[in-house]
Length: 82
Image (tube, rainbow, N blue to C red; front, side, top):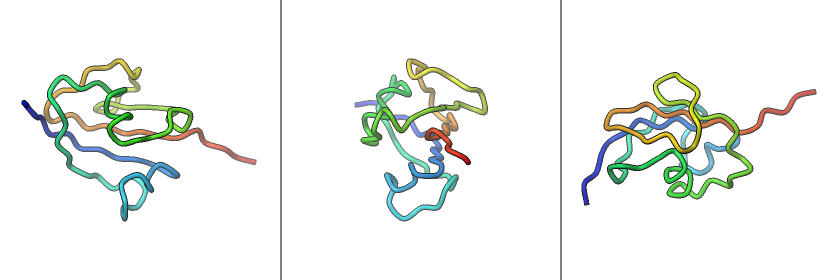
C-alpha cells in the first residue's frame, strides 16, 4: 500500500480522538494515498455529527476533498456558545 504523510490538527472536543494531545496540536500521520477527508474521518473514528468544519492547507473543504502528501488538515466540531 502506498502511503502519504499529512499534518493533522483536531480542535476542541475532537482532540480526545488523538489521545493525549491538546487542541490544535499538530500531529504527523501516515494515511493511504488517495484518501479523502471523509476516509480520514472514518480512519480516526470521529462521529460524523461532531465534524462541522474541515480545512486543508487553510482552505475550508468538503469531505470529498482528496488529500495530497504534505497537506495540513484541521477538523473542528460544532461550536456552541451562550
